[in-house]
Amino acid sequence: LTMDIGKRLVYINEVVPVTIKIHVERGLGLKEIEYPGYSHEGFSAGEFEEPERRTELVRGVRYDVLVFRQDLFGIKEGDYVLGPAKLKCKLVTREAPSRRSSIFGRSVFDDDFFAGMFGQRTYPVELESKELPVSVLPFPEEGRPVDFRGAVGDFALEAYADPVDVKVGDPVVLRMTISGKGNLDTVTAPRAAPTEKFKLYEPEVTKKRGKKIYEQILIPKTDEAREIPEVSFSFFDPVSKKYKTARKGPFPLKVVSQPEAERVVKIVSMPGVDEMFYPREELGEDIIHIKENIGKVGRKGLFVYRSPLFWAAQPVPLVLLGVFYAAYRKRERILRDKSYARFLKAPGKARRHLAGAKASLDKGDILAFYDATFKTLQEYLGSRLDLPAGSVTARVVEDRIRASRGDMSVSEMLDDIFSACEMARYASSVPDPDEAKELLVKVKKVIDYLERAKL
Image 1 (cartoon, rainbow, N blue to C red):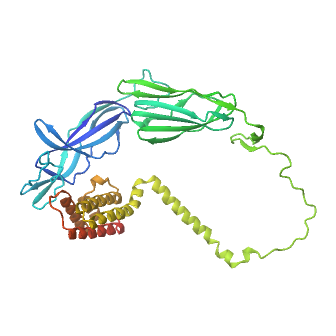
Image 2 (image 1 turned 90 degrees about the horizontal axis):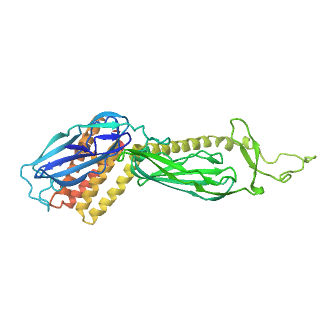
Image 3 (image 1 turned 60 degrees about the vertical axis):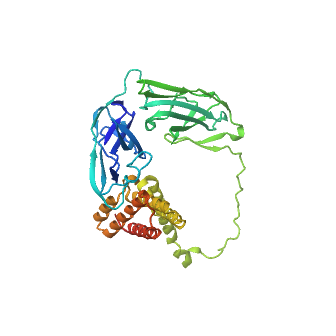
């Protein structure tokens, strides 16, 4: 197991790519490979990318390699040590070696990587890499712009205003896009020079495809506003080790006064209270003469509050309020808690994917059935137990069931399912369709049990 980073001297907020590799000699097999873990004090870590499989020639020996990648960025200056990286897996040996081969020779990524045939022996192992010393440098004081807010990378700024022909009081949207290479999480909104001719609102931000988009609303207060001031965005480029500032604008505007009919009248203006405005009204439009004689007055119909049905219906609004509040709390939790959202969606996604697997089985595509079943069960267990899909193994589920004092026969059933899927996906022979049907029944039983169990 090896761990490597692009550079040993980095700046605060600078993205540092970390690469962790497993080198496996030809003829050996690994299975139940977990994601690596390591100490990264002084750094914030992103999510692991999907592992990459390839071969490498090291000192004349060809290895099968599994590559894990992750981005870090320093959050505090100082000298730190990354690692060592540690990874758990199972080493697979055979009593009689397999003769299967590929165009690259025997590979850890074909029949041996997730070996599941009979006659094999497995040994749990834990691999460990070397430590890596890293220094996080502070931002230099020389040349630091006033509007620098900690953005690190190499960025470009694009901006435009729309519409540019407005009346006083009409909104103008200033759209600003920051793109480039670097840590977008540290990018803040570009800043404009202060002005009394506009009312400014906080910009809304969206992040997608390696860029951040800010949309800020400005409202001209007077027809003397001829342009939106220049906006600027400063960042630190770790390659050139210099501060850079991107500028756009000013943005010309054509602002005219509002017509007399659309003007507003100030009704209330109190200290600490925003001014309230209402449209100007013509005097007399809403005036009705006072009646001097009310005429004959009498009771019309029954009093509603005397009806038993009226009192019986009183709890209904409270019940509806409780239902709506519960639905609101559930929706808010789904939006805030990604693990809870995954947990709720897991059964529905599993049923849909199992239906697709059964369709492959009905068509006679046994290998596609086993592949779909394995991925479905792995994704369901990851969502149900709040784990990354790649770290889901039969052993992890067995530990959860044992800790909750659950039915251990379910764990044995799950181990049989994983073994059968591994054997079908990487063995040379095609499994029996009847065994596939029995496997589908087991998968449904496991999912039904886990939906009822509290793990």
